[in-house]
Each structure stands twice: as structure tokens, then as C-alpha cells.
Amino acid sequence: MLIILLGPPGAGKGTQAERIIKERQLAHIATGDILRSAVKTGTTLGRKAKHFMDQGKLVPDELVVELVKERLMDPDCVNGALLDGFPRTVNQASFLEQVLPNAGFGIDRVLSVEVDEKSLIERLTGRRVCSDCGASYHLKFKAPQVRNVCDRCGGDLFQRDDDALGTVKERLQVYKKQTEPLMDYYQEKKLIDRIDGNLDVEQVYEQIKKILDQI
Ligand code: AMP
Image (cartoon, rainbow, N blue to C red):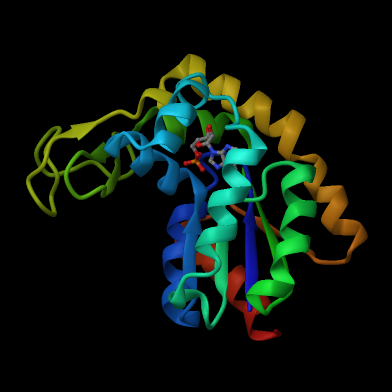
């Protein structure tokens, strides 16, 4: 099974992804997470990607498609995978179609999680992440018990560079220009389902579950 989660930054794809992979035993392939970890450990990929990520721009297709191609061959993908944050351009989408037969599956559904722009800005700029365990918080919607300290592991919380207001606006522009065309692309292939991401986490997941239950 292969599910694609499409949606702007801040739509809650990561939160929904955690639930979907648990229920469906899928590998979670989140290109943003893989790239951030490459930046943190200072690999060649990370060094090449950092400059684009800091500016809220997309990392060039040729770097991202290679890492997805390799990741799809990992043993945990045997039952299928959930792609979160990939593809983000039509070029990446057509690359995916070329490599999927090798991995042994085709695209089952593309779930487009849609949230209004004002909420996206509020969600992203208020987000804080634990520097040790990666747990995610929000200053208004999910504040930690002690300011700037992770409830789970006691680590320090920080704001991702790309969650600063200026970069968030750039990321949303990039999404509109480079990723939104994928909606028509997958609409034509009759693969897309629209999910109202403005609702609370449970209600968003209910919509997703109904669709997954039909596959
Ligand atoms: P995310 O955590 O998914 O919002 O991704 C963070 C950043 O990683 C993005 O702003 C891009 O710079 C980069 N990135 C993640 N996925 C992709 C992708 N599929 N194509 C290009 N750049 C990506």
C-alpha cells in the first residue's frame, strides 16, 4: 500500500502520519525529517540541503528523489509506505511513478489535507520542538508544563529556523507555486481525496480513516 499525504506546511501531516502508520503498519517516509537529520549530522546531503531549507525553499529535486528511491528499498517498506512531504513538485511525482514498480506497489490514495492560511501561520510560528527527542509543542495549543522544557524528556525546546514568520510566508508561497499543481495532477488520475484539516486532530483522522477503510 502506498499513501501520499499532501498539504501545506503546518497542515498537521506529521500528526496524522503517526496515527496512520501505526494503524496500517506502514513505513513513514517524511522527507523533511530525513533532510533535517542529514543537516544535523552534517552529511553531504545535509550540507547541500541546509541553505535551501533555511530560506524556506525546496531542496532540488535530484537530491530528494535519490533519498526517496533508496528509502523505498528499506526492509520496513515491505508492507508499504506513507509518504509525508513528498512529492512536492510535478517532477518529483513523475519520478515516483517510475520507481514505484521496483518497490512493488502503486499509489493507492493521495490525501490532501487543507487548512486556511491564517491558521497555518499561527500553527507554524507558535510551534516549538524538543532538541533532544523531537517532540512537538505549540505555545498556544499544546504548551509544555514548564516553559521551554519538554514534558517527555526534559530537553530544551526551540523554534525551527524555518518556522520564523518570514520563512513561513516564503514556504507557503513555495507551496502554492510548486506543490499545489499536484492537486490537478492527482485529480486527473482520480487518486485524490480532500480532507478538512481545520478540524481537531480526532476529526481529521476520522475523515482519513473512512477513506483508508475503503482501500
Ligand atoms: P517539512 O518538514 O516537510 O515542512 O520540510 C522542511 C523543508 O525540507 C522544506 O521547506 C524543504 O526545504 C525541504 N523538503 C522537504 N521535503 C521536500 C521535498 N519533497 N522536496 C524538496 N524539498 C523538501
